[in-house]
Length: 213
Image (tube, rainbow, N blue to C red; front, side, top):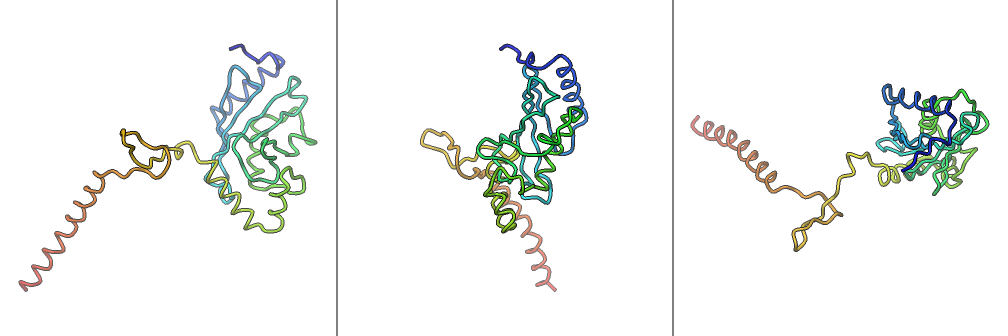
């Protein structure tokens, strides 16, 4: 596969490489960057939902797409993970934030951009909405907005370690179904049963001792 890094100037490639290395050795809070060495113009990162928000507990994949004249032109930002948010258009995932629009400065680094995007999950701006439904709900019924955002987070933004295959049961051929609940081990049940018996034994001994008294 051919490299597409030639879309960026040599100076931009050096700057981006340096910044990505810095983000991997000293990660920003709640942000994990994934480096595609074949295309540095396509930067992807996992953003943890900030505590105290309806996105808490979720992990959202987003990307920055750098243009050929970066950093003189702002990158475009997109959420790959589906999210209910006033400033994120669905289904494209386009992000609307002033840092990537009218407030863009060539001095803004990738770390700064990613932190601004995470802050957007803490404080949405319904006045510059790309998702009108989310903006309207946020302003009219905040609790309902949180409930809907939390529901989509639980469906689409599960952390990787929680995306285990749920197994419904075993089929006739001994194959597992990929949907449904987790299989409960009979060994665990036996172990729990034996633990209960052990716990009951001292109680019986105490009763016998009391009778003797």
